[in-house]
Amino acid sequence: MDARIPKMRKARNRQSSGTTAARRSLRLLREVGHSPQVWFEPSVASAARWKVIPLMDETVRKTRPRHGRVVFDSWEMAPAVALRDVADGHIRRLALKAGKVTLEIVAERTRDHWEFVGRIYAGNEVQHAYLLETGRVKLLPRTDGFYHWSSISVPHTIRVVSYRNNLLFGGIRW
Amino acid sequence: MIPELRRLWKRVLAGDTAAWRKLVDSYSALVFTVARRTGLSEADAEDCAQDVWLTLYRSKRSLKDPQAIPAWLIRTTHRRAIALALRSHRAGIRGDGGQAADPKLPDHELLAIEREFLVREALRRLDPRCRLLVESLYFHKDQTSYKQLSTEIGISPNGLGPLRSRCLAKLAKILKNLGLSED
Image 1: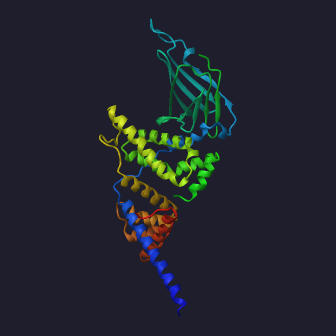
Image 2: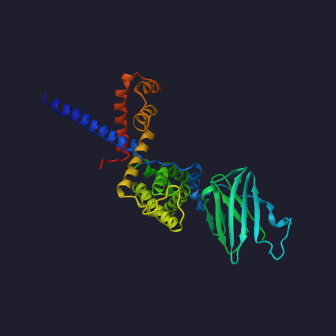
Image 3: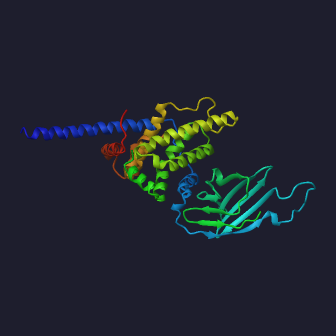
């Protein structure tokens, strides 16, 4: 009989600690469930951009580069109307394509540097899971999938990298 | 701490990009919630979160203890969000959740966010039946009747009480494994 008592005590202790733990869980559930605070989930697009961060490290890229080409260049179009005394070429629009992926860029020349805005599309859908690389600059997209950067020099090569694609747009003439 | 975090972090350090993506999936809501509750708009919170993830990745080798990652994410996000909120306020721009004066959250609120995250993580790990029961009983604003709930779960109303006890016990075990302690 004496040998049974420690076993019974252990069983009772297990039961009471289990009950205590369950009561604690209940308290937490009520605290969280009745909280007036909202729990926020980020959009799929924003999480996609955060997941691309390791691609900044070139050693983790597994895909081989594929070359793309310029499919639209505003500098090759004659303006419908030319304004007198306005310098040509201070804004340039480019579309660069490789397979189904298109990189659209607007480049604006200011007094002492260039401002660039880019966006990547697959068909008509804005893509968020790409890293854009030009020279030493490596960019993740901001909200709405826009890439912003400025530089005193122009990019002759731009690369856009995802986990599936490694697209190289080279030989861009300025 | 989420038990797999140590193994996940080891893989991140070894250059496993799938592990990084899983890490982002696991903690993105925590980071985003801290940024939003500090008063940032959705767009500003997304950019804040991006900066935080970038900082974590760049300083990954200096983080020796993976257990510290959730607390690091909360503290770093909160600091960045405060700076962004103050900068927006000085520029005269307010987000849709913006606080004009002091965006700093008290410590107990940051702790509450961490606990809430762990509770939600624990719920995610419950089997579907227990999850449905617990969420219906404690998370839905409109109380579901026991009769309706028993129909949805597929047991008799009399069975709900014992099921509830079993589910709470399971939840308690998961919470203990996650390292959640009662303060």
